Length: 223
Image 1: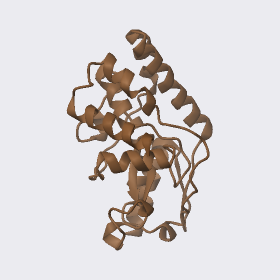
Image 2 (image 1 turned 180 degrees about the vertical axis):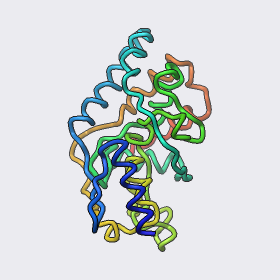
Image 3 (image 1 turned 30 degrees about the vertical axis):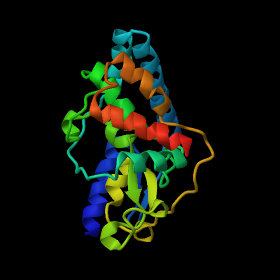
Image 4 (image 1 turned 180 degrees about the horizontal axis):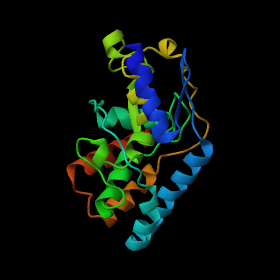
């Protein structure tokens, strides 16, 4: 199993520079410069799309589409639970410290400019923009359910970038030589505050997936 883990993380490292692997352990790091540049690109694209500058957004996002390779997809907790944890953790990965992006925001952008920010309903990596795997906010069980962890307690749930989530799987933190980071002091929201505007612009407000997320994130901000 260990050899599989290290092979998996090496592939991820080649893909994004996000994971560095040594012979005896796995270390998760975040590249601040690349992260800031991509986050700013998404922010600019949101502004352009909401200003009916779709072509400008398409040109901006086009260089940000590298190739990908397949990986697995796992079922996540309810939208309400995820939103609550995302807001608590300020949409920041508790394993590597990376700022994450709210997946419904990425999907709303994909619905407007699918040619440059493609999305696959089953997250097929060869057909899905790498942002979904590198920057997407996801929920992880610190102690995996398969290892006896509580499935529903917020104390066992943290925000994780999808990259870290894919690597960690059913491993314990000490087995990976990882540490759980404290909640970030930065008030980052993964562009979740822009979701209502994006949904309105793309006529997605009444689509069940987006409607449920809009309710969940609104409720989470009230608690």
